[in-house]
Length: 224
Image 1 (cartoon, rainbow, N blue to C red):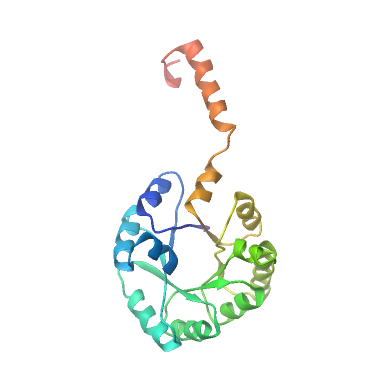
Image 2 (cartoon, rainbow, N blue to C red):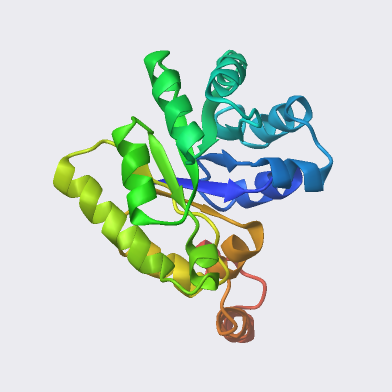
C-alpha cells in the first residue's frame, strides 16, 4: 500500500488535510521541530491525535556517535507510537543503522543526496530511504534521476527498502517522482494543498450550481 506522509509538526494542518487525504503518517526532523518550538514529547501526542491515533511517525536522532544514536533510537522505539527512527546517512549513521536493525528498530536513512549513499543505506538494512529531491536539484544535480536510479537498484537487487522521497518545491516534481513507482512520499503542507487545487475547478463547480439552481431551485439531486 502506498504511504502518503506530511512533512510538518503542525498538528492542526495535519488534522485538516487528513479529512481529505489518506494520510499515512508524518515525517519530522530536528529543524521542523525547532522551527515549531516543539519537543518530541510535545509534538508526537498532538500529531497522533490529529491522525486519530493511527499514524506512523518519523523522528530523527540527534546524537553524534553510532552508540549514542542506538541508545537514543531504543528510547524512541519504546514510545507508545508507531515510530520510525530517522538517521542521517553519513558514515557514522550507516554504522548506527546496522546496530539499530540488530535491535529490530524500524529505520529511515535520511539526508540522501546520491544513489551510492542511498544504496549503501539500503544494504545496511534501512527500511526507508529519504532522497532530498529539490535539494539535489539546487546543488546542480538531478533529483528525479537520483530517485529513479536508486529505485532501479533496489528493484534489481530485490531489496525490501522503500523510497520515501522528500524535499519538494513544486507539484511537477511530485508527479515525476510518483511515476517512478516509489512506495511512499512525504509532502510539505503547501505542496499537498496545491495538488488538491486547480484554478479551473471552482469556476466549473460554480457553473454547475448556477445551472442547477436556475432549473431546480433549492432542490437536492434526489428531490429533482
